[in-house]
Amino acid sequence: MQKLETSRLLQQRLTVVLDTVAREFAPLTAEQFIWKPAPNRWSILECLQHLNLAERFYIRNIQHKVDALGLIQTEPTDQTLQGDLVGRSLRYTVDPQTTMKFPAPGMIRPRRVQELNPADVLAQFTELQTLLHDLLHKAVYLDWNQTKLSTLFGNWLKIRLGDALLMLVAHTERHLAQAMRVKAEMATFA
Image 1 (cartoon, rainbow, N blue to C red):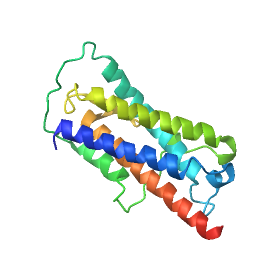
Image 2: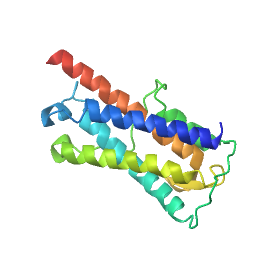
Image 3: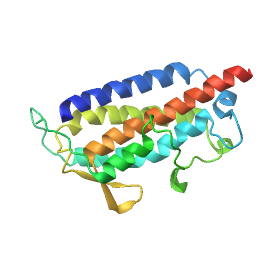
């Protein structure tokens, strides 16, 4: 994979995510946002809140790396992306095609739906995903193989920027698909 093409594809995927959320979830009522297909499954609101909690950490770290660039070059250099074991493992666990379920760590589990405001969660989701989309324009000036980010598991476990960006978009798509399944199930109970 090449960095510049990957950046462009990730931006396209994020555009699809943002369009889908605006079209499918923005018109929902608060009751629809908190509806659960079963007590042990997440609602649409919980899916979006989980993404907000998990991805805010990474997106803010990416923003810090981009802000530290200082002078912007006129032309980004392309590079072949080189994932490592940590990156491949984290990407695998969040990939929408992965059928295995991995429990969310406690720090990124959503709060009870009664404690969440659907409009606030949706606005924060849109803000974070838009920020990530915009950061991809500037992140191409960074070395995606050498620039490392801390993970949610601590500073001792780092992930390459390229792997982190791929992981974030895949994670978003995974839980967006989960939220869409909840919406589809909700329609059968209406």
